[in-house]
Image (cartoon, rainbow, N blue to C red; front, side):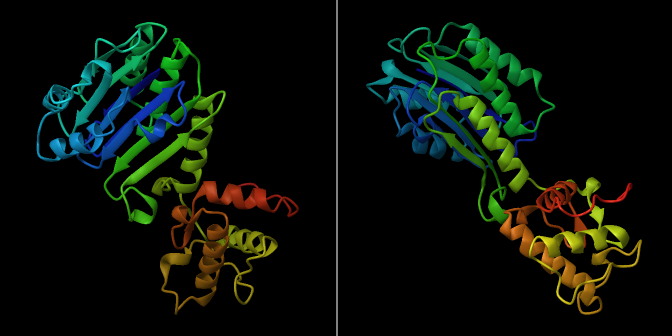
Length: 309
């Protein structure tokens, strides 16, 4: 009733699970992952104990194939189970019990494993594999989603669609660096769950993705003037009606006490960004083009920015 992929990034810093199923809230049952340790998917007649037990074994240095072998050997219900494990290094591993609903099976390779049951056929897992191996240029969460989408397009769960989930972990990758869950999204009941999961991932990336330092814009000159006006129109005017910083002098080039105008602009931008849930994309003295675009959209009544701004 389910197909999934567990995987590790090429540098070993990220682990993740993507799953789709004709089952309510598969994301509540199937995936588990721990940063720099590994990822697990337990499905079919899922044994939820596989998840903490498997992560404990991985944490102790047991290889993924041995984790799978040990878990299923100790489980009298193994013939009805499906399990996939990927560790910090080496090949992934997968198990399909002989009583899992057909078509059922899995494949594994270096840093990944894909598996499913009650599928339209083996082409589903072939498609998951090919998409995973062929889309290495994508960011890790999007690559997992692409593999899941390929499995769906190849036939997916032969009973239909209902839920999907994506879990990605990275040390310190969670909100404000205070946790390890880089992405933790679920679609519990939806007629097109993988598409909906993609929509949620796009929103998540916009709100919580880290800005690219190469694209950041200095808050100086006409851009600082425009941002101050936009913030005022959005209800977050810089204190004292901050004037633009001299062109070529980024706001962050001096300390706040020596540049109260720049500090006021930073503070106003932070207040607005917090209201819009964009605080993870803030960089003092500079602005992410994505944040700027969102700010411009939020005040459409203002004049359009001059060419080159």
